[in-house]
Image (cartoon, rainbow, N blue to C red; front, side):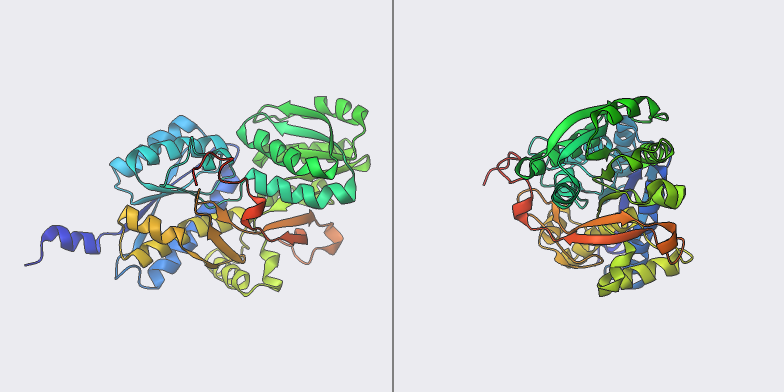
Length: 389
């Protein structure tokens, strides 16, 4: 006799909770990660799922608010019975989600930049970090830019965790490169007028202005910097150069700006996995190429589902063990998770925003200048993060 509960467990959907800021300053990035996650769900289901069990994506709007994110995550776990949580597009919001998943002992794969989430005080064995972190991203850009563009820098920094951590990443890498910090000028999240900061920046006469912000803040800062002629006075770089913002605001505001990113579709010229991912994404989304955050949405969900398949079910402990050993080239080259903190060890791309004349189509926005292939030696070490050997 087969128990009804066993039959249900073998046939119920695999539910992936997905809290992201569908409204607010990072809405464009949230839409991109949703598109990537939808492709991961489709591929899993088209391949037969897990012994016939199909996956389901439960999307919730966290409104870019930590309390809202905690509430939605609790609902996903307690009411909707989500087996796993993937998502967040904010350093602060992901910590709120992570706190809930730790308490409920549910696997969480974060797709937002953060150094803090890897530290022992916030981390747990249920915490995975699919995204690059600021130490990785800013460090890679610093190692590329400082020897080529000059050592005297001014930071224009969003005054919250993301901006602070990016600055720290630059400073850490810059110590051995002779970087001289002239000022760290901070602005509130959601700033719409940066012009009041420009006279001070110009008076300091830096070699490089390093813009450490995200989403709509970055779009506005770059557009106004271009309008005020700052690019004629010094180089402008960003640790994370936003794909969506660049698509919206076009060539003029961004051209010549150098930054880092986790993925760009142009990798397909040299990487078969990227070509496969791009083709599948375009087929599902009306010819649209995937952005960096679409790649994160895809990888965040795809890897959790792959681990569930390896584990043979949705048992949290078994899926954690499977995900910790997952490695391979899924869309951007080899990726694996570091043992002490479940950080995805992966490459960082250094890109430059193209001039209009060199673009082959409206989605041809970046030139790949370099790829820094990461290994654990370039991460903050485990003892520094508070993890015991």
